[in-house]
Length: 366
Image (cartoon, rainbow, N blue to C red; front, side, top):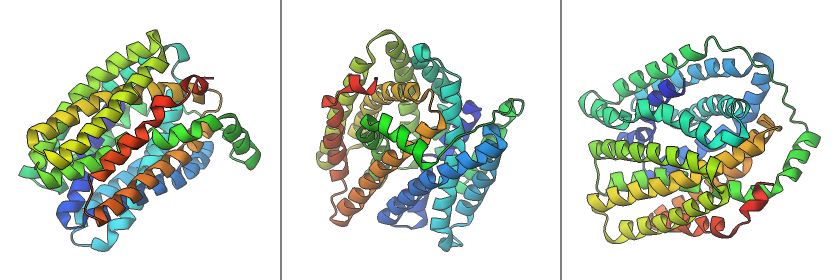
């Protein structure tokens, strides 16, 4: 399922925002679109939990397909019906919520704490191996046939991704989100609030970076090739980091990834300002993908292990500080765009990444 879904989403992931730019929307409008998407994802996650309590986790993926088809159909006709823009941002957030909540819960339930690194590496690379050339294929589909064909092919693969889970036994849930239960989870995990605000900023800023390189120097085919390159690096990094997490000190692996990520976001800022040539954009993107992969894999392993016993309650509540961090990033980006200093977004991410140089990671593992 993960592999087929990875192909479908890999075809469109980095190109939907670029499509919105090519349709004619301003950069600020596209950033607001992403902001609406993420806020919707957070709000709808609580609805997904309610639905999962009644129909089970697997059937949430069936419901998701409805929103995927609506999203891609709406994007195809967006040039004709531009008023659909933010409605599609809402639909995109709903679709994401119906995929990620069950996916994360199954990941917690089907993995073991002593082998979480290798398990996450296998899960991620199973999808990456199949979909590694999808950004390049997507770029060719756009150039040869247009975005409508791209959306149709992506929807087909996502629909096919349901086949492997049709026989999966239903897993009923009984998640409680009353105020006492939520208070207990927040109180026992309060040390995760700040890390959850900052941990995804590098990945989210990667979307802004894609905007920058598209506007500055690269075309659709260039971005497709860059996506393939980053995918190959990501597979290698995920595998290596998965082994290190299980065998070495997770704290050391995570700290290394945080330091390298900070330095490479700083390098990204200087490249963007002083030498935004295609070669330097390729180089810094690839190297930063390596660093971010090390950090994200090690931090993700830590979070999934923490979720054992709390299951969806913890996984849903952690979305609140995560989305808050994204809101801060996108609002800051909108301000930087308004003063024509978009590159400052990358400097801001480098500064905020310093948090993981000095925080008490040992405390997070308690």
